Image (tube, rainbow, N blue to C red; front, side, top):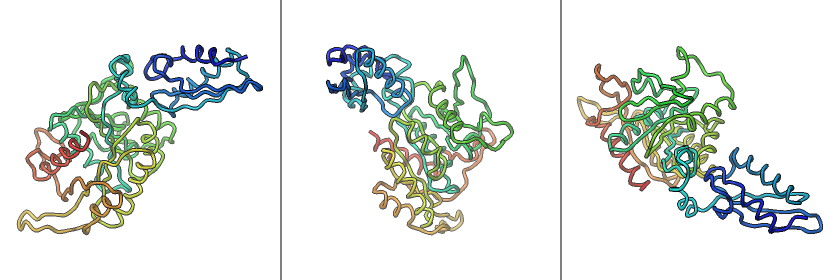
Length: 351
């Protein structure tokens, strides 16, 4: 016959899979209720992060130890520990736990760059925001999570390859940004024809098996739209802020609203909207031509109830043969200054 005393004793020895502390130490045993006539026990347990493979493993251990303690049947509910409890364990967790990007103990800020459709310059925005944050003194990494349309290495002019040592991947660093992309692991620009589960494993590897070191911000260049890969990333991350990229055209803004809605549905907070290709400015006359119309960015920000972080004009960065990066604007370029302004706004909002 199971008793509450036996249940608390058995459960208290199990470990939180992220904090690596016993449930007794974390106060993770929230409630225990027993139906004597059926010898059924219901328990509520709090852990650092729910809806993970680690939770499933713990769930099996809970059932095992409670049945060994005398229960016939077991019901389990999980919830997440409060932010205050997690903070109290942040300094005492193992080094590997705090360095795991997907651990709730990791302090890295995730910023996802999304768009409703392709062709709006999402990757260009991702690259330049990452470089701008690095120019402002932040420790920055960029994951090219646009698995089917990877382009970040070419945009940044990266010639090196990641180094693999002892089953750990060391990212390439360029312009102060640590970069990982599917493009590093595909020969001769071959198309990706994998299905969702395989891609999910690759993305998980980018998070868990890359030696990122200490980071302030990790930017993710998401695939366009609201497909499986984007959804997998949203579900993997412990928390993420999201920026939605659109052009001024009303249809592009309409489609981009879906990406913003997806972020909200997966409990990720919108950081703001960036309107790319906002206008073309003539070098000879200085006049602005609104090639793709006007109003899409402000309207989208209003619809999503978030801020318009910036409007990026249509134009080409100045290329340098010595330091070739065809999509990166120099810090003193007018557009480069806009990206620095947007990056500072992001920092201010996140602080």
